[in-house]
Length: 215
Image (cartoon, rainbow, N blue to C red; front, side, top):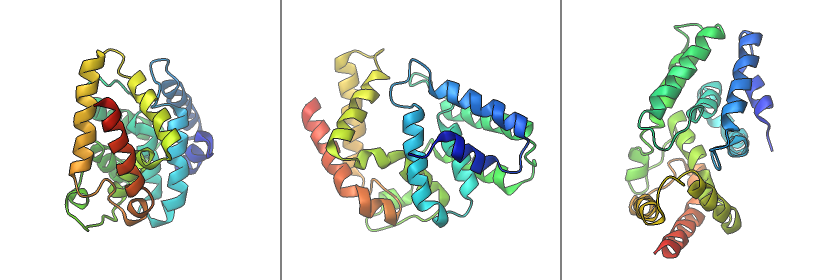
């Protein structure tokens, strides 16, 4: 599995080394918080592994890497402004690391982090449509776990529940069912051709099985 250190080094090449080292420590500490059961370093490493498979399809690979690192830098399922906070964290990092204020890398990463709050694009909503932009790949990287083999998906399901222990079982079940049913109602769970061909069918099977379990 690809390590966060290797990918961070790939993303930060040419930037101020001390600042980058300091921020990597912060990232690793945040992803290791006790309250996290799914959005951990292991989950990040899996996304980084998938990233290696598709990075040559990306217009700005480093921007996608930074978006992966900062997407869940701060994570609180009770918060409504997590995406905005993480965008601010990335912008602060970029300034400290010496990233040019008018650089394409800064602008592209900010756009990608804003896209993480949507979770859905036209490529998801139109039957037979595909997306090929970096934002489509970023969203698919985040959703790849849905198409995992059943045992791995079951483990993911339990870890997600662990991050919502503040909700009662009936309340969590109702909210989770709503999310899962929305996935099955849209034409495409995955936007890009690569992820759809590899994971779409298994993702729908996994989701249907979880719906039956919760029901």
